[in-house]
Image 1 (cartoon, rainbow, N blue to C red):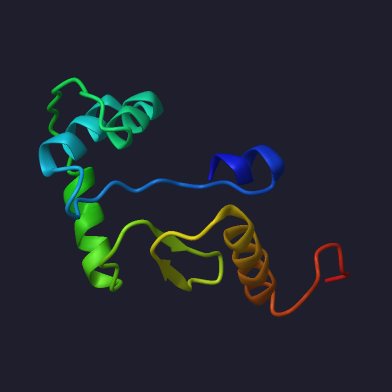
Image 2: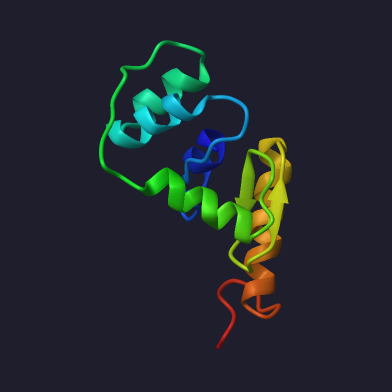
Length: 115
């Protein structure tokens, strides 16, 4: 994602935290309560993250969303046209998939074309 964002300022990723296998539920809750990209990155680098708890239902709501939408693996990418890709893909393939989904969402209209 970082590679794509650095290259393409027109692409934005919104991260939704949910529990699969790793990190564990306590770590995911700490990440959500910290509201920190640095804590998220530390967790995925298997570094210790500060134990933090808060009354947020964010993770529970994200788990409900994942279940309702058939998301059963991480990472999961939801594209602008609503299609979902489960699992890892390299930056070049992901960027291509994003561009294709944007085109589909626009009804096949090319960027910059008259509306």
